[in-house]
Picture 1: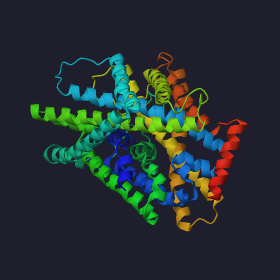
Picture 2: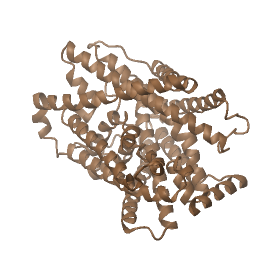
Picture 3: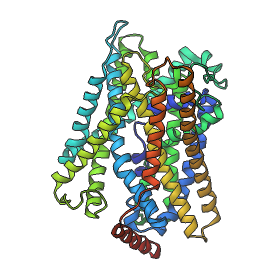
Picture 4: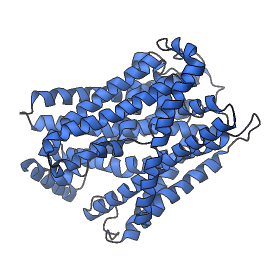
Length: 499
């Protein structure tokens, strides 16, 4: 249960609360989005025991892609394996490095007055890359340093959570109780306007609930990694209870934290909470400490991912399931680390460039301390983090569907929980795909009607968004391995089913 909590709780909660409120428009619908998504995640928890028991221990160590390998066809496994290797894992470093730098810079702006400098995009990118070197690359080469750094940073992330709850309720009682009471149910969604392309975002709070699901998935991402420990438990029959209670404990903590922000800060943002506190020197210092701790929390998550991705890539090289496996000695720690770093750097450069030219109306860049390019990168991080987590959960849904197809004698309770989970994951996927194409079509129509507006404002971002989404789907569902690779994976999957 503690492993579930430790592998799940992270920095995502500090960044996604305002996203969910922007989708739903009211406190009530935001909490409803949390409740529905947590219910879907609990349903996944209640299906893991049966899947893990029927899968091999080797595949269980790979998480959702291991279960796809056990219960689905080889091409699906290869697709989601490649998504994990070349998109999900390296992109997480891109996202968390910019999230961390955003919090770090916000902590510094606490002390700025009305006259403040604008932070330029090239400083932000440079600082994000330096954070990668310190918190990801150095731990790969010096594992003892990385583990020690991870232990310290893991403890720090609990401070902002506790502080947010206490400060939020104090501000609500002393400053904003009347204002919040009027906005608990009433929706403040922006109405569709003629001067911007149409989007499903903001049409209805019920659609906002569906749009919020991927964001909440990002906050809870990681709980399923505990599936690899079923066979090591003294009482494996308690596996489902342990993982479910662990998720519910996190959900309870996040719910209290979310409520405290929704009722105390403008936009439901943690950074809005600290803005409300900046009244005197003491509260400014406290705000600085909290924002700095959030930055360290993000860097701590980078550190944890660095330890994991090194071991994961080494295993993939050993199994010859990654490119250049014939040219890299998996027994050489330096070569494996260097190979891993090159993939992370390549992903960082690619997605940073996309972010620089990708305009997306997200909830970030809440202050005017950043230039336009920086705000675009922050908002792109918000979008891409939702997508990567959504595709990880799509992988879980694929594994569940494959299990149901290959095990007709599954219990009725398993079938109910599995179909509920598949339904909500499919619903959120359908929304994201539909909204991306609707935004593209409306951007084309809008551009024709407003030829005086630059192509980079709405049209190019709409095109890039669809291209990225199609690229994600292509990697996951249209990957085909060579004959030797297909044969090796087919034999492994057959052995797993026999076991």
